[in-house]
Image (cartoon, rainbow, N blue to C red; front, side, top):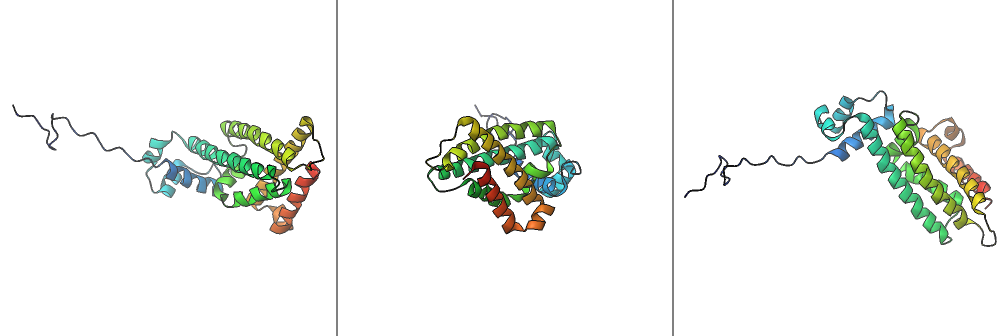
Length: 213
């Protein structure tokens, strides 16, 4: 008995499944990040993101329900990378290869290499969305833990730092990191007035004053 085939020659007469549509989520995130960094969240539309990514708005919506979801995904990706980078630097510091000042200024250099994503995280997304702020708060908890470890790692061998004291120092370092990052990325009047080299020196000096190293 002959086996039935469909018009494409497939046995059983069953139509071929449509080819799996390749994901372009990364393209959408990259395009949106560039636009959010330049223009902020409010003025960017899904149509703008689609045009930047070389896609249709329908294709963007296929991957993300809204531009807020794109923002949150971009921020999650960046915050994960930031935490991982700081963790690596704290590990290096624990072997005697760094100071709190060098740790923070090194992070500013790392941010510079990821300027669009860093600008979105530290500057243009600030205060725009409750979900974004919740994500930032969760990331701060992880950064605080790492900075507390950094305080202990960079302390002179003869100095004993109590947990509460280290926590206060870490809070100061986190505030300095966030403030310095915003100035650095926005290239604001403070950075312009000091110049990059002096800005980095002053940031390092203040970090070391906070920790007494």
